[in-house]
Image (cartoon, rainbow, N blue to C red; front, side, top):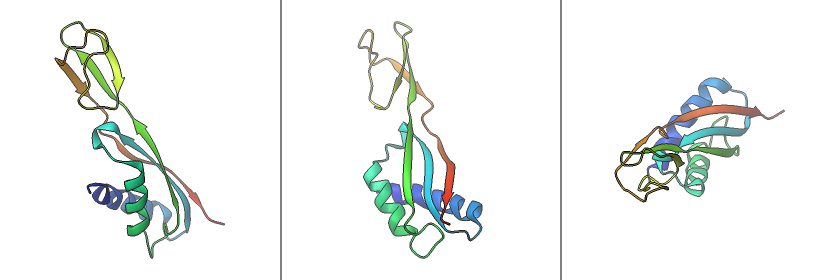
Length: 111
């Protein structure tokens, strides 16, 4: 489950930003290319954050779609499926770019 690796990077960023302050919520922008499942990410984050500032913090994921451009008809679209076809002509001759973000967007601290 690659979500653990992703969450380790997120937790490192959380800990650097939190500087010891207890965290209640973590918001992360994650690109569709990571193919991360929200439930798996939440479970992984909960397990690896035990004993840290982020223990018991909720994880809020914002999925960022990738951009699709059809090489046959020129159509463009946003997609979350990396096996997408052109929505206009159904061609699989497409270029998919972006959607590879992993950004710690915000933290909320406990009082």
